[in-house]
Length: 244
Image (cartoon, helix red, strand yellow):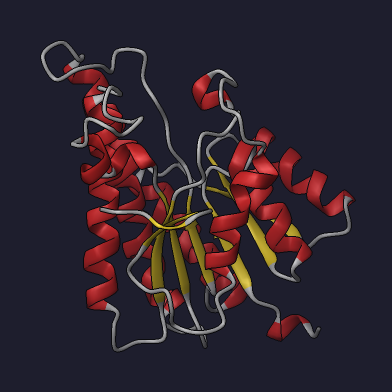
């Protein structure tokens, strides 16, 4: 594949965990992957690891809570590639102070919303002009079943008792962003979906999850590599469509 025709993907929070595995699987599909990470040393190490595996990968310094960092990343991608084919909004956090609405730390909730929702929104706004230049732009927002209002409100759901107002609300907000972006982009070549990776063993949950990162990366990678415009504006996990 000639370099000028190779698709380019930016994955935020890609120096470890699900983000790194998404980058790896996209790289194996022939995509030039950009490792978005706050920490330069860790980001460069992750990109170097993928290059050692024979993939095309490079590091882009990107802190989703820093407007200047986002602007610099967009400028660097434009200068190097002229467009962006795939954006995976993967960066996210949890907070020890999160909990039920009556007792959650307001500071913790604020940080969760800033990183898990405001950050992806800011990154998407900055990258959208580059995505619109691509023949078939793709946006994948990494959500969670905990962001499903339907599941959170269903007493029979396994997620009903997960009272984490900050984290859950941040993912619900990310889902709303997905819905509204899909409507705004319906007459363009850009497709946007929310991906639910499942309960994955990562640093985010102290490795209590039961899925591996390769298993978790499968859904977002599939959505990133969609050849047509369906699904568009959906919430998808390994079993199919998830209720909002």
